[in-house]
Length: 358
Figure 1 (cartoon, helix red, strand yellow):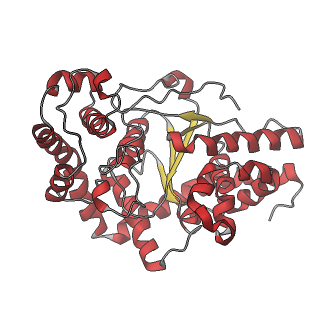
Figure 2 (cartoon, helix red, strand yellow; figure 1 turned 180 degrees about the vertical axis):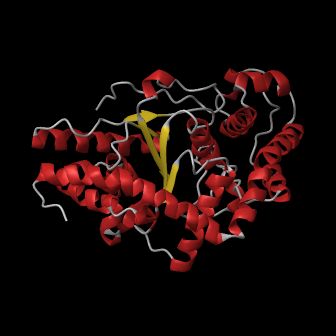
């Protein structure tokens, strides 16, 4: 499927992405979510969270901690509860305002799961069989994977459609799931002869939308990587950030003076892209400053920059986590507001499908 107004995702540090105009988005609704599995890391911050903060003053935004997605694989209950609060603390510490946005955890809004069943009945098995992320996550144990992991994209579609969201900030690896959301919305509209669900469009914003591993520049930075030195966590101290960047993989050549010189040098490209994103510069502007430097000098500058951005977030996260009741209150308030939006939409969906309202 071709998106009607696709948004270009630049390489890390190449300047801001192309986005719909402020006027075009002013009457629309943005939804996005983050899983409470593992630590939030630099890739989450630069690729998503920072951009959410920049959207919140101008658009109607709903941000969700998708805890039901998390249990598609087994989670220790106590660890999961802690992770839900920690992710929420991370979003708040990064600058999300719970008064300007609706911030909640998915399981407290039953309409997500209720619409997911409708999406299960609209989506086709062939569509889900083409989802590459399921193949990657299930690996050779496909037959032992949970049904929830297989049907995960349908719940993601429900997350978006229950609010009739018109735009979703996504990374490159989520575009296929958003395409499925559009397929489900279109088939629902066609099956029931209605113009009910919008065809949600992708919104890819800002620098470093794809931050790579510090140990392998060809792999995306990930919570699931066995090595903690592959990523910078938002909970890392200044000393830990310095240690990880010092040990980040590089190559023997000095930094190039042009962007073209990064070709074939994935680790150099990744570190330059991270610097560019943290400093709100393009990669060309960064290389104009540091081109020709050895990596040892550049890593010192990058460390100072990363600490200056992430340390205040780290400190605020620790303060928030010391008061879990306050975090829970934010999530309860967000759930009430999310339910107020979702319930009338679900009622309309039930009417369209022919189900009796409760």
